[in-house]
Image (cartoon, rainbow, N blue to C red):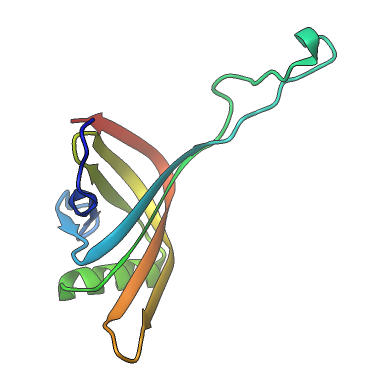
Length: 138
C-alpha cells in the first residue's frame, strides 16, 4: 500500500437506519481504527516445552473507531446526536484508501464536545462494534 493521506479515510453512518444510504461524518480531522482479537490460552501440562498455546479462532473479535473534528454539516451532527441518545447500533462504513472498507453494526460509545476560548468547537466520538464487521478490499 502506498502512502495515503489521513484525510481520505472516511467514516459514514447509515442514515436513516435501514436505508442503505450513508451520511459522511464531515469535518473529521483525526481518526483511529483498532481491530482487536482476544486470545484464548490453551496452555496445559502437556504443552511442548511449556510454551504457551493459543486456541485458534476462539477469541472475541472487535473493532473500535475514534475520531475528532468540527461539525460542518447539520445533518451529520443531528444524526450522530440522535444515534447516541437512542443508543442505536447503526450500520457504519469506514473507508480506508488503497486498503478497503470495514462495514457493520457499531454503537456510539462516547460523544464529547469541547472548545477553547479562542478556537472552534470540536467533537470527538468513539464507536464500538456491535456485531459482525465485514471487510471488502479495494
